[in-house]
Amino acid sequence: MSILSALKESGVEFISGVPDSTLKDLLIEISQTTGMQHQAAACEGSAVSIAAGYSLITNNYSCVYMQNSGLTNALSPFLSMTANRIFNIPLIFVIGWRGEPGTVDEPQHCMVGEITLQILSWMNIKPLLYTKSTLDIEVKSYLNKKMSAGTNMAILVKKGTLNTKIKNQTEIQQKGGITAKEIPRKQSLLTILNSIPKGSLVFTGIGYTSREIMKLKEEGIGSDIRPFPCIGGMGFSSHFAIGSSIGNKEKKVYCIDGDGSFLMQGMGNTVVSNISVNLVHIVLNNRVHNSVGGFPTCSPNLCLSQIAKSLRYTKSVTVSELNELEIVLLEAAQTKGSYFIEILCGTQIMDDLPRPKESLSIIKEKFISSSELC
Ligand SMILES: Cc1ncc(C[n+]2csc(CCOP(=O)(O)OP(=O)(O)O)c2C)c(N)n1
Image 1 (cartoon, rainbow, N blue to C red):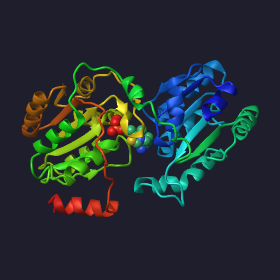
Image 2 (image 1 turned 135 degrees about the vertical axis):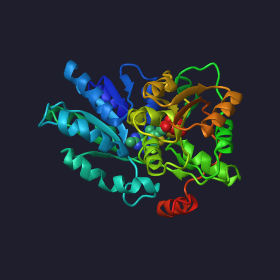
Image 3 (image 1 turned 120 degrees about the horizontal axis):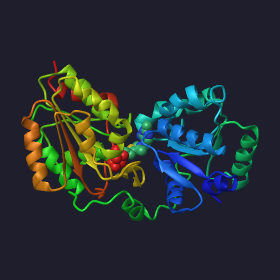
Image 4 (image 1 turned 90 degrees about the horizontal axis):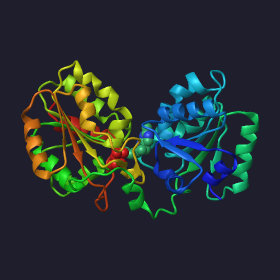
């Protein structure tokens, strides 16, 4: 059995969420199963709301999956809409536990990892801790007990418990939408790095982008720039970039991000319509959340540059050929205002992607001193 089978046997028919590498096996199973309707969500709060809407109308429990870093996002609709003292629409949460105290994990996960149980206690949830030795019967009896009581519940999955059977990644990625043309990922990044004028401020997003750029810099590409890797706060790197452009009108500011991140928080970029920024916002659209297993985003076939156009970026384009990209990057470097570039790119992954080698506070200090901000 598996978590998915236990959910199905308990009568659950609907699941929504944002992917997490801790939950890869569950997500692969969801993509291959029948009898469980699945809706990928743009963010965790949206997943809670979609699942709650489904439950309200069907009078059945539904399930929400996420990484624990999405819990704070989920809290908004939970605490003021679905919780038992509000509209009382109980849900089943399946949560990947990154940054669990006593385990080794990336620095951005340590704070949320430490307070995960506390957040769940604010939600009045006593989770079932899912480890390699958790028995199927324990999962079923936990679900059934909580369902009979009509309460919220959570299965908290320890890192390394579920990601054992990853085989069909290519198949999953292929479902992430279809494009006739695309620029190979590495080629896109090389071209971007070579186009950024010296002295620019560069912010790179979560997912593979920051790590890919770290690798290219280790290979000597883009030696004139020192990017600030926004490896936490999914979707907010462009907001960071906007803030820094407000704070320094002289410098050209770049944000290089993924489509999953843009879809998660892109509406916040609407502020570019009423402020003066000197921003080049680049989104590498591979139509999937590649770094957490290659699962399709909630809307893989949207044209992101059309969205940016309606958010009133000064200029907004989609490119799918290398020569177009070169021209557009040149123009963006010379244009004042907000320039949005959607690159239709592939899902190829470079080998041996590095992770930050220094502490994040040192990375921040080096970014500040190299940016000649004072
Ligand atoms: C709030 C939040 N939700 C989920 C995650 C887990 N997560 C890390 S990277 C990522 C996917 C990012 O997708 P995209 O921006 O398209 O970049 P790619 O992975 O394709 O490089 C996800 C879902 C997270 N870190 N934070």
